[in-house]
Image 1 (cartoon, rainbow, N blue to C red):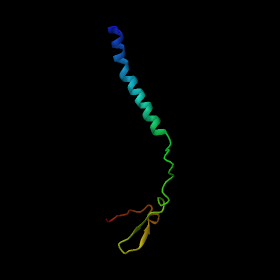
Image 2 (cartoon, rainbow, N blue to C red):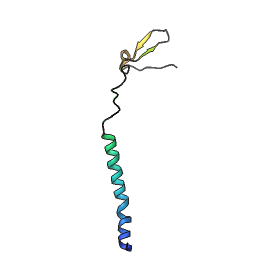
Image 3 (cartoon, rainbow, N blue to C red):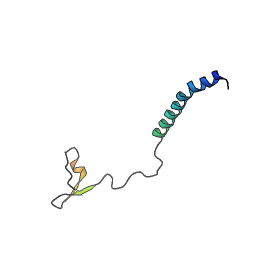
Image 4 (cartoon, rainbow, N blue to C red):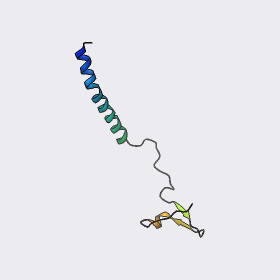
Length: 70
């Protein structure tokens, strides 16, 4: 390779690599999930036990501030 051709490659290679990485990242982020899991059946119905021993559904607390004590 001549010195001029080598200089052209050095100038254009980093932007080309960056563009390819951006395209690959965009394709990976916009691809739908293929794991086959639609979600846990308990995901929408979690319950916790209060300090009194009563089970409380989290859906009944929607929109309210909640303090969780471990």
